Image (tube, rainbow, N blue to C red; front, side, top):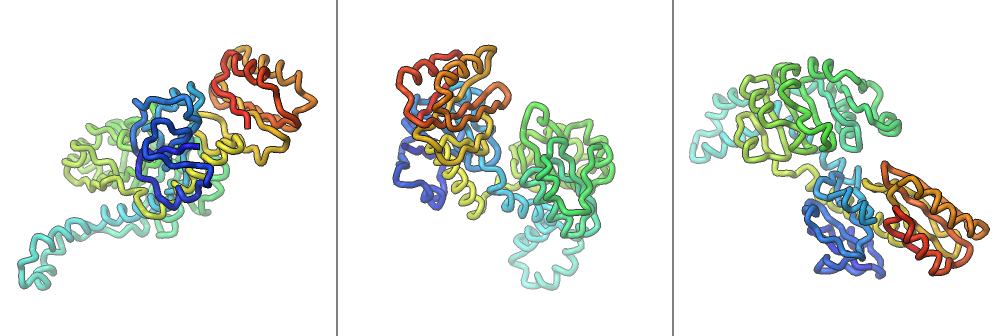
Length: 385
């Protein structure tokens, strides 16, 4: 299998690829692709491409529907960079509460002052801040990163609220006792000294922090955004900062407009840029691609259902990727039924419009049957392993 990298990918992660995989200097003819932030919206998909792994959580740089329609499975690596982002969120809370940046800049601006140590005692009053102990934070989004942020804040002595109507039971169980999950955003706006956003950027979440929300939040709020720039509306944060409703806005995605606003701490997308995070993401991406390539397993896909299949139990495995229609399942079942005595394992799952059908067989399937299945309306790709 040929593997193409659209960004610099950790050599440690690529080292997990076995000798059956060849990392290419040019990705044009790759069977598998690993990508970080490079945009794939104009990427020309070749017929060989079967899967893309995003070494990170966000997939806004990949056209998911277009890839699904071509039978290309897209993976991400949720949680692999969660600790790195958690740590920078905690650091940003401290930077916003204590004017550490202002103090450091004062020292830099007074390097020629021979009495700097003495003059510091007068100057430091301008940079005095508040402690985070006892303050209230609302963590909006309780996924892999949000959950870690909530737990870390609780350990630091903050009152912690969490909000996530789509949180899994597993995610909620990982929260420490004492963290209150609240379904009323208006309540959270009223009481929060900090709000930390950990949401995907969707049509429903774009401009999540808007003028209407800005009118509801507690005056002096510190807003933390280490998820996506589109979650915070430019005009709303400008107004909130100018009025003092938001005391500080810390963002990992500083546009030219936002970077030039007062009381913004702009960080150049460093949230997951740690050596450990990059290694973790690349390792997970490599393992997911190998599992799909060799076994047809789909783990952490964002455009097809996840299907964990384990080792091939028969002589061969057939994996069908398809887009649903009125006759799809019936037509596939009709052909499989003719071979039912040879089927050792079967799985079928759907995610929205896209489905995966997997079968292990006791003996090899003749090429004519495989071609017949490929011609079924809705079948996007058939892999015979």
